[in-house]
Image 1 (cartoon, rainbow, N blue to C red):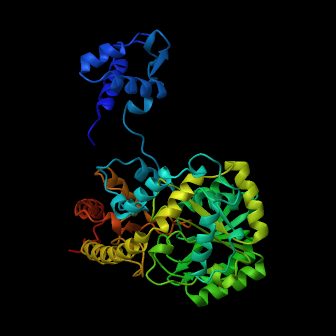
Image 2 (tube, helix red, strand yellow):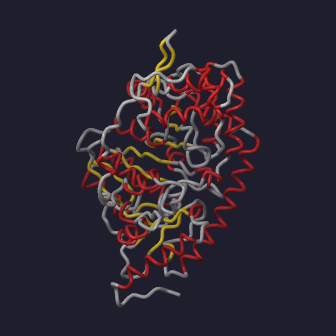
Image 3 (tube, rainbow, N blue to C red):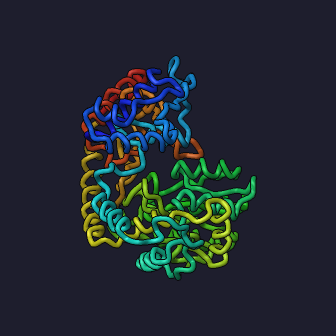
Length: 470
């Protein structure tokens, strides 16, 4: 992005402060002198200086000019010596992906590339909101959240056979905040929570923060293993079960009606509350069963957000559930985050209801289907095979060649600019040591497979009985 003249002035002043040319308390050149020196207008320098004041780099003394107020930067010990290796845990993939620069390849991350998102709709929504004389720009949200957005969600959920009124829907900052608030409402330290094994790794991290005891239930191509689910209910008396139904993360599997029916019958008998995370709903080709639809939101809380299809920068999620539970969750939201993002909700709503969003999602689902097939074929040449063929979504849950440890492979690849998602980051039982989750939308660069092939060969050299499929 090209710099404006204002940016150039700001950078010049900041560089001189950093280089100690302007020491703390030193007077900067006058506005007129700076304008003459840099051959710009006085108004341009005034704007640059005012922005620097707002950033805390300089200070204005009325009638006396502008003065440097920079401080000597503290010694950053993390920049001295080699970087400490971090154990690959449930947060390793997220931190690696979020901290990565544009040169890193991220087939292990859980989101779409920016260019695959509906940026046109976001820009249009931003322009619309900016033009309006609206409280959305400045005021707090109502406790339940944006009324028009909740009415939209009511209609959206009804399309998945989830019967709910707008007063049973509460907006949140994100899907993560939704789970956190539910944990605050239902859990005490030491309570047991069931999760799928494998499951989205941030479930593990969130539940650890709530000091819950977490039990993994093996996940099958049709949903949780019902026999293991029933046994865990009898042995551990869990309070919650957290799962995906539409498109399961990381496996891409879909819940079958028969398994859904059995899970709900067992949950009813055990007085178990189910949290159904439906964050990937818009990526489905065909609607699959929802526990919330079968249950009528009696003991199922339906949550979701739009960070995967609209924007991860403009955060907005929701919880739909029983009226008495929503009432208590509203109090918790006010206590922990007060009003929520009224502006964010309006921007996301405008984007979702824009005429171009539906067409964009139709194209996106087709892109993902094509990319799943392409990625599967390229992985097959390396001896990496999918656990199942997902009907929709961005993930392939894949098994590595015999003898290859996913964690070791990830450690080799990250040093070569490739971030992977090792299976045991998703598995509570640590039984997925030879699995990786691939995000097919992040696998469009052939360098992904070149680096992966090289790293596989390094791993296989130490395993004589294994070989790389050519």
